[in-house]
Length: 428
Ligand SMILES: C[S@@+](CC[C@H](N)C(=O)[O-])C[C@H]1O[C@@H](n2cnc3c(N)ncnc32)[C@H](O)[C@@H]1O
Image 1 (tube, rainbow, N blue to C red):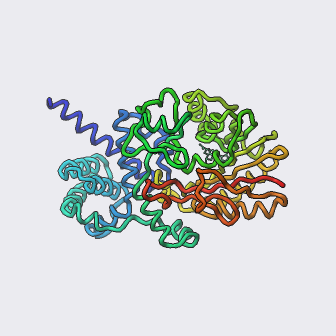
Image 2: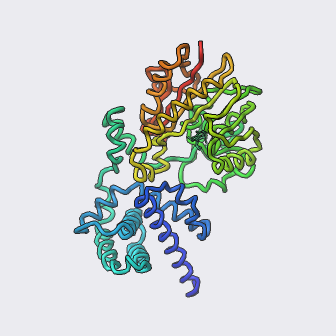
Image 3: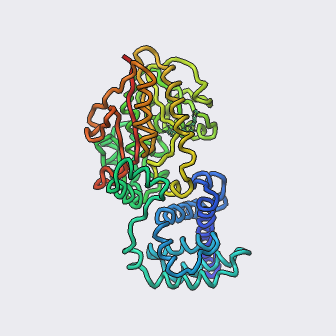
C-alpha cells in the first residue's frame, strides 16, 4: 500500500468513528433518536460504507452502554464531559469487539485532539483506554447483560415480572435478525436467499446483510419487516377488492401487505416526509395505494377493513433501536395514550356496516395495548374482540381480552421477535 493510500485509509477510519461519536452526542446529550440524527444529514458527507460503519458503531455502543460505562467507571475518578465519555464508550466497545488496541487508542485520542474543548483531555483518553484494553476480553464478558433504564424497567417488571424482563434484556442485547415479508411465496424466497421460513410466514435471514444488495431487492420481491410487525395485517386478512384504510401508514410495511393481498388501499399518515418513503416502497414493489397526507383524526370515508397501527412509545422495537431507552424518558407516553384512544374512536366511526378493525402498537406497555382495548370495549357498547385464529398465531400469545401479545423474549431459540400488541375488533 502506498503512503497516500495508507493516509486515506486512516482518514476514512477516523471519519466513521468521529461521526459515530457525533451520533452518540446527539442521542445521549440532546435526546435525539438515531434515525432523526441520521435523517438530519449528519452522515451525508461519508462514503456509503463509512456511513454504515458509523451507524453500526453508534448502535452497538448504545446497545452495550451499561457495560461500557461499568468498565470505564473503574478508571475514572469523576465523569468527564459528555463528548469525552462518548469517545471512551466507543473505544471500549471496539476493544470489546476485538479491534487492535493501538488502532482504537490512536483513533480515540485523534478524535479528542481534534476538538477545541476536548483536546486537553486526550491524555486521559489514552490512559483510560489502555487500561480498558488490558482488561479485555474477560473484564467485558463477566459483566451482566445491560438493563433497561428505570423509567421503562419499572412498568415492565410490574406488567410482566422480573424474569420476563430479563429475557427481554437478553433479546435487546442480542439484537435482531433480518426478517423479510415476501410478495409471493415464502418457501421460494427462503431458498433463494438461504433463509428460514417462520411459522408466521416471514423469511428470516441470519448474520450481517446489506439489504439493498440482496437478490430481489431491486425487483421488489420482498420488503424488510419484523415477523411480529407482519402479523397485524394477517389478523385483518384483507381480501381482493376490499376497501381498506391504513390510518397511520408510513413508512408502509403494512400498506404493502394489504396492497399485495389485492385490497383497494387508502394509506393515510400525518407525516408527508414519511409518506415519501411509503411511495418509494410501493414503487419498488410494483404495488399501488391511494396515499393521503392528513391527520387521521380528520379523515372521512367508509371502509370494509381498517388498520390502526397507532403512534406509540415503540418500546417493542428496542432490539433494532437501542437508542430509544436512552433518548427517551417516558414523558411523552401519556399524550400518546390519549392520541391512540382518539384515533381508535375515530377509526371505528369510519367502519362500514359489518366491517372490522385491527388496532395495534409496537409497544411493550399494556397501557398502549391491552388497556386500550379494555377501555374501548367500555366506551363502545356492541364492540367485541374477534379471537385470532390461523397457523400464524400461537395460542400462548392470546390475552385475556382476546388480543395478541408478542414480546422480544418469545422465540429465544429462533432469534426473538419485536414486541407488539394487536386486537381484531368488530361490532355485533
Ligand atoms: C407506528 S408508525 C406506523 C408504521 C406503519 N404502519 C408501517 O407499518 O410501516 C405510526 C405512524 O403514525 C403517524 N401518525 C402520528 N400521528 C398521526 C395522526 N394524528 N394521524 C395520522 N398519522 C399519524 C406517524 O407519522 C407514524 O408514521
